[in-house]
Length: 193
Image (cartoon, rainbow, N blue to C red; front, side):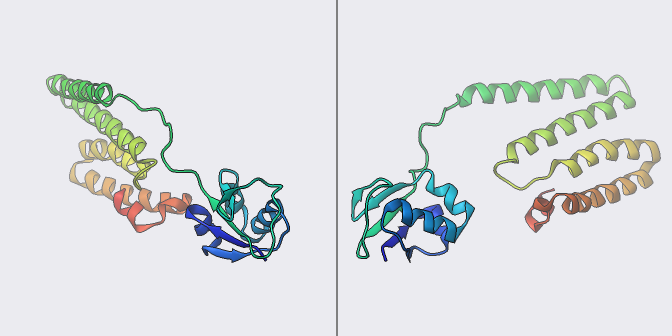
């Protein structure tokens, strides 16, 4: 049986780095491996390079029992588009200055306007953190947004009792979001929220 050597994601999908697989061609060996290791392994095969005994090979390449077939995934990185960080940085500075300006102006307009502005600015900040963390960290925005909206309004309307009720509401929202969305059930997602 030919030996199949696996690297990176294919190795993780299969759970081993070397495996013997039946087949008389590269295509037959890869088909047998895909049926053996499942769909995530098969997806990784689509972008992997195939080498037989140290030489590049195609699906039609014949193999015998002593051959070694290596599956090499593409190199990470590649030619991704690069954004100019100074433009994004300047935009964030502008947004922060605009938020500060709104808070200062509404502070002189009365409590109702100021509370509304604080809720709005905090909600936008939470949404920004959520968008930033969607691919990186574990942060569920919905409980934080609920807290940003309910907390100041409840505290303004009912004083300390309203603030206590808002805290209880936000904690329950975090737990309910963990029930509804399975990806929020880990402790790091709950703690981040």
